[in-house]
Image 1 (cartoon, rainbow, N blue to C red):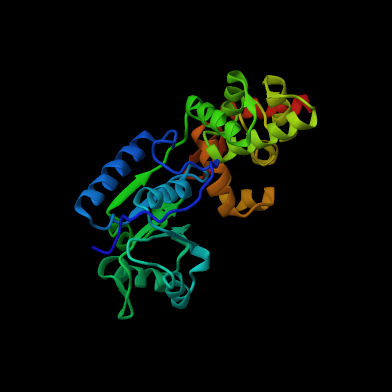
Image 2: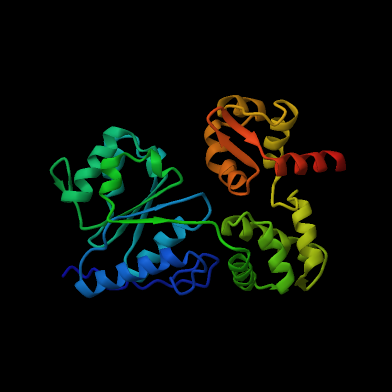
Length: 316
């Protein structure tokens, strides 16, 4: 065997991103599936099947790819779909890949068809244009699973959907992040930050960092409810976890379109953000929270959204 699971020793200090499944909080179904797949690959001394991770941004797709590489003791090579627009760029990605390594492509749905077709033979037959490749595992990450072509989707043996985190899970992550940053956070402060973090660890970790800044700036020794609330106010995060752009989207839909259905391109022009950004970054949470309702005629505001934005406008 080619030393597939021989760990490459690295001096890694404790960091905010967990390095093992054991330290990874949340995503229980994803962790179980990966744990079984990793254990099986190690037992059989074979390459881990190709993996696709999909779901809203900030839920841990890159972190999980790191963990997979770490659990296998191999290196991970990172790229993004927008950087792989030519066949040459794809070939360069494999320049420093060795047997057993992980190749991670974020936003894999943005790879053009001509490059995607080369991936087919790379994943299935281990070569590109008759050039033999090392034995590798491809991990594709996407926020738009439906944009992947069926032939590409079918070549991933393991498909994992990541979901939003619970407040309890996020509060646990907040405690760990604070510990890594060398600060103390109270249970209630962790829960407060978690309740506003949109079910997303990436957002939560930013909250903890900003709360740490406020704590130091006010010469306090602990992140308590007062410090946490001050950090959220600094970031303009409201009671539903909405930020300035979320509220701008809701406000435009309410004031300009009276809460009635509006198309994504029209909405994008009105708020001054690309349609793709609204679809991939803002809409998933707004829809999940029942604030925006997708219809055949476009997006429309729910009663809850109208009441929330009316209250916010009244306060302003």
